[in-house]
Length: 163
Image (cartoon, rainbow, N blue to C red):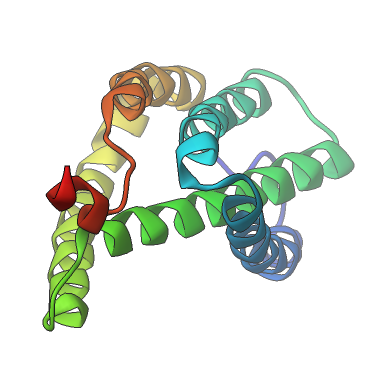
């Protein structure tokens, strides 16, 4: 929902500050992954991304002020940017050989199809459940991915092939 914000306020909070936070999060994610290594950073990033959904559930369940809304949106966009960096590194680790650019393009395109399909159906769920329960359900649905992140072999593909 709009949380009572007019179009201009939503544009500033989400469009301006949210976009800046997303870009900053992507840069921060790259720095964190470079510093800690993908193996150590991957699981905590998946946990943060799932937890961000609960922030939106909290917003939907309350009557937050504009500053609270802005902080949640900016924090979630920062986390989403960090997640984008992790996803990109994950895909790059799966790509190898002389066609790695094509492999990356195909893998990211397939993921885009999944995201588009989920987005297309989410509106119906949002209307049926209401905003609070929609975000709670989104969090619950994200948990298997968080658990699977523990099981993913996060070594680069070249290292996997040599073992």
